[in-house]
Length: 124
Image 1 (cartoon, rainbow, N blue to C red):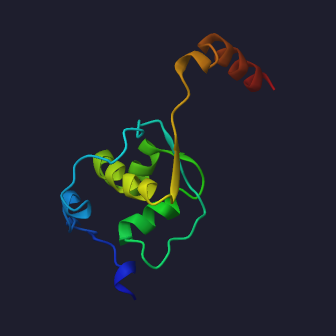
Image 2: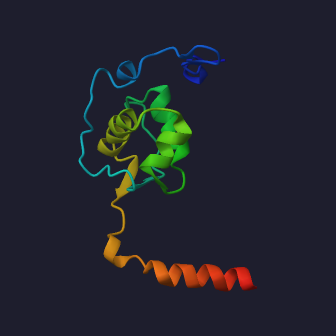
Image 3: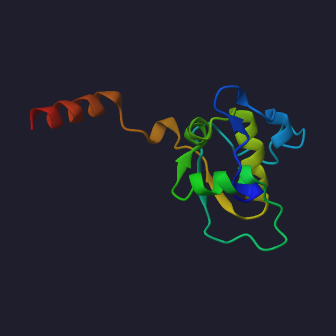
């Protein structure tokens, strides 16, 4: 097993490495585009040999092979949202992911329409 494959979590004790260590002590993302509902997706551009990717960065790239909201990525990674934002900021800076802002509330269908749709589907 390579060092890159080792998870920094102990099943019984929890995280072995504190979250701030994963981010190099950084607490803020390099971009302000990381709303909890923003969608992140890998660009498909492989990291070159000069890319500075840790095991957590590679793990996040695997999690965003398809577009997913930031909050879901944090949940699946089992890491605090603040840590995820910093790590995703690193990936964004290297052009390895794209981040799309969430849809504005005005472009969402009204709740009454969604309820009617659900009722119609249940009736089928």
